[in-house]
Amino acid sequence: MHVVTHATASRAASAAAALVLQRLSQHPSLVLGLPTGETPVPMYRALVRAYRAGRADFSRATTFNLDELFGMGKGDEGSYRSYMEAHLFDHVNISSRRAHVPDGRSADWRHEVARYDRQIERAGGLDMIVLGLGRNGHIGFNEPAAQLQAHTHRVALQPGTRRANARLFGGRWRAVPAHGLSMGMGAILGARRVILLVTGAAKARMVERALAGPITTHVPASLLQAHPDVIVILDRAAASLVAKRRL
Image (tube, rainbow, N blue to C red; front, side):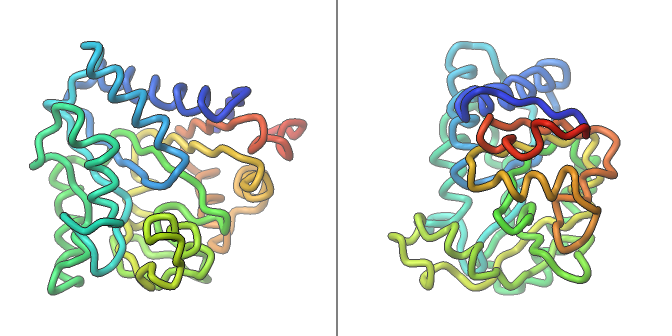
């Protein structure tokens, strides 16, 4: 696990974008896992700028998003599909057939999660995945639990996770769907390279637990300690409690 700290959240996001762009340049058919949330927005802006400047080509890339809110999908304001279109998909030359987000509106969610796993498998697995970190230690919608799911699944969202998404619903956390569809830990840990991007002082305690605490399903991000190729990108605020630790 390689930990890099930057002075600001903006610089951290730019560093994450640079790693994606480097791998995309080396492997134009990159299979990339992507997050949502506030933290990666500056990263997506940097990727769009690189594309507009002629420094990135997404035409052969394939993306798989980590999750989607249950009951929501393409065309729904507040859906993760709409988020990705607003921040990345509509601004670069990625084919809509190659930009995958779980369909939270599927009439048969069991069929949908199985289909999503098959798509990832047919793509050869994830070459690289970018992750954020929830305040409760979740990655994707893999919430803390006694057991974690290996495969894409439907999950009940904890109140804190719903509050974190309230910005998508006019600040009304109770309007956030109570369930989500999430990529499982198998696909996440099976990615050949993992980038964990975390910024802000509010995440500092969980960063410490995820990187330096025991490996436990009650802190899902701690399982990344067992992955052979993880780059953790932090800003100074998020790194404040691990800065003096030897990781």
